[in-house]
Length: 278
Image (cartoon, rainbow, N blue to C red; front, side):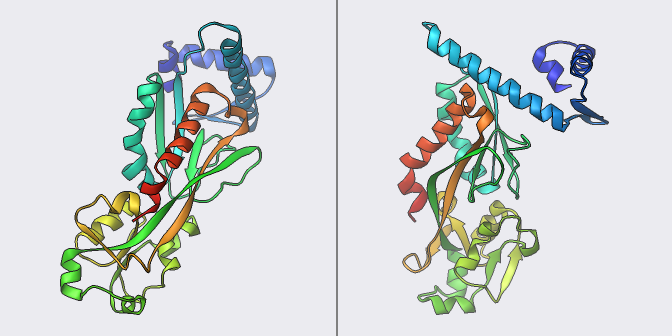
């Protein structure tokens, strides 16, 4: 049981303490399932209270002691696969140089993780998430451009005008599996007549473009660093998406959460040119 390992006690000890707490409160905090425990609604309410208590405890340490409380623990960050794999992951070394005792758990999904249900602590998304008591901040933007491989352009020719695109093959998302419409960014440019490959994975799309299958609309943060890719119509085709950093208000001021949200917001401001320009 992960909780037992983190607390360095036996599984039976954790189970007994949970049972005693439920008995004292006269509520069921967890649903017992074959693969572990799942918080009930009452469990989520208690978790929110405990997190507020933690934040207040850290505030006391920072206000009344000569040495500030050490920032440590785990923070679960949810975002999309592309920006996680091609951009954010490499930045966390700099974060851990400042906060070596904070462990980031990076979760990637096609849909927006529910912060209200505590599926994650922090979210980086392209649209503002909805839910009660969320602190949502527009922290930056990133740009996308049209790319192809040199081999594809050698065979099919390089488009010189927007009208030329109707004669080309494209790489795109699986339409009926696009959970967030804003991610289907190719539609900002055109609705392609010939799509030769579709994938829910941005990484797979980029590799398909690089292998010469067709044109694809890709974020600058990944495509500009891929030597296999050539930008097409850079002055005519440019799409932009916002970056939102979100956290639930109950844990907004917990030290490790606040450290990560500040790091992300500062990062997007510092690297605004890199993210936005092709």
